[in-house]
Every structure is written in C-alpha cells, then in structure tokens.
Length: 130
Image 1 (cartoon, helix red, strand yellow):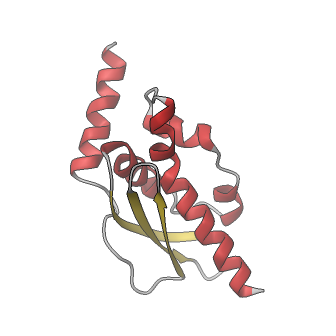
Image 2 (cartoon, helix red, strand yellow):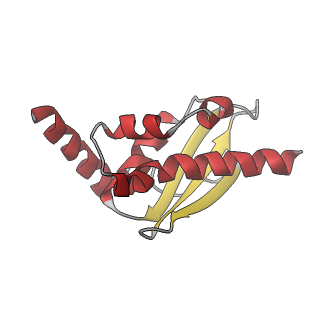
C-alpha cells in the first residue's frame, strides 16, 4: 500500500508542477490531441536532432485531469534521446507503467493521451516529409 501512495504523490506532483511545460522554439513539429470522453487536450512540441530520427527536446501544454497531465509530464521526461521508431513502438502498457498505479478502464484514455498525441504528431511529420 505504501508503494501506491508514493506513486499517487508522484502523480499529484507532476500534475501540480508538470515537467517540460511550455512551448518550444525552434521546433520540428507540434501536434494537439484530445480525449473526447472527458475533454483533456494536450499539445506536444518536438524538436529533433539533425538526424531527423532522434528527439532532442520536447515541451507540452494543455488542460486535463491529474492523470493526463501527470502522464504527459512523465512521458516528456522520457522522450529526449528516444528515436521516432522507439516512440512509435510504445503501447498502452508503457503509458500505464510510467504512472506506476492501476487506473480504472474509464481513466485509461487519460493515461494514454500524451503517448497518442506524440505518436500522431510523428505520423503527421513523416507523412509531410514524403
């Protein structure tokens, strides 16, 4: 029980003081997405290294519940240094593992929103480069 209380505190800390909060300039691409079931909305700005495959820096803004903002903050800390292929390979379990607590089925869309926004942004960026 003590472990889950620690994770709850971590989530509240990331919600109250999100890491990587703000906008990037310059940036390689930006993407906004929302969770229509509860109204959460996140925008991720991504700057790639010169190889156009590795994330240099990220920042995000948005509005949402504690789960969606904390997930975005935790993900934003993990993304620098990852390749686009690695980010595309992330799945729902990866997002839930970052949070470290069990979330109810209704809250899963909140937990995975940040991952989906970044993955959709990568897809759009790659489509525009073709």
